[in-house]
Length: 113
Image 1 (cartoon, helix red, strand yellow):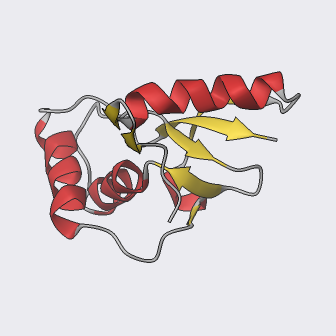
Image 2: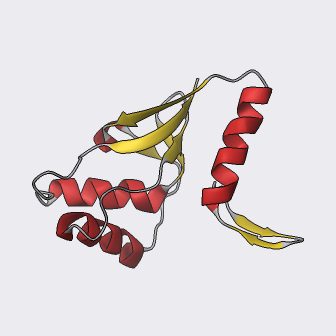
């Protein structure tokens, strides 16, 4: 399953570090990468499973105000989530449950294409 984090010879590297490095790599290869907010309902997952507790935690934090936004998700040119599935699904769940007044309904994203 795609994700931009994992164990390396130096130890675990989170997606908050690997995501920007991946974007830089794509740009070095001549791939256009844009950063913008996007409606999560228009995206498709590349993973078929997820940790529901993590998704529920993101949704609850967005709805309560404990989280004002999620980290940027990485998506392909055809609107598939490459990294950030739990944040995407949490935002989608929070939106479907009515969200919170003043809380954004869109996701920050890096989109290749």
